Length: 126
Image 1 (cartoon, rainbow, N blue to C red):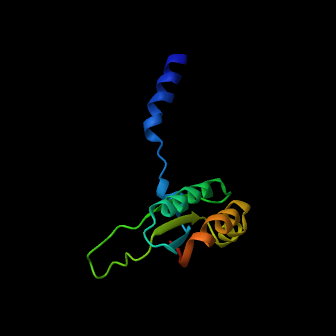
Image 2: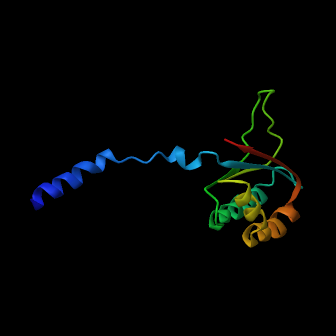
Image 3: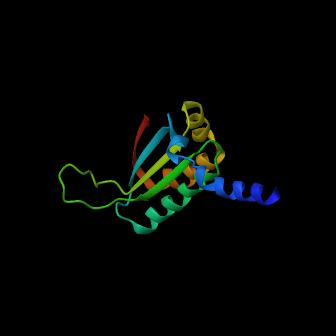
């Protein structure tokens, strides 16, 4: 009997799947584009990328993606910014809490404000 139970338990593992896409259903995406005061400054871009990774510590943040601009010759592509940040949260309440959180406020005041000339934000829901 114990053998049958073990076989059933191990055999059922392949039957259980988690759709990670469902974790983000109705999620709110907070897209931030940053233009540096010193455009193209590699060290400053890295600072923004690194500090943005700390946003993962903030409760309610489902995902964080951050990276540097990719140059493009296509007219439709705006590659004039330096760094893009994507923060995914479940809802507006979580976005408000993220924006007010001390980790975000510290990054904003210590890194973003001193280095960034312009910020453009797009918020959208799935």
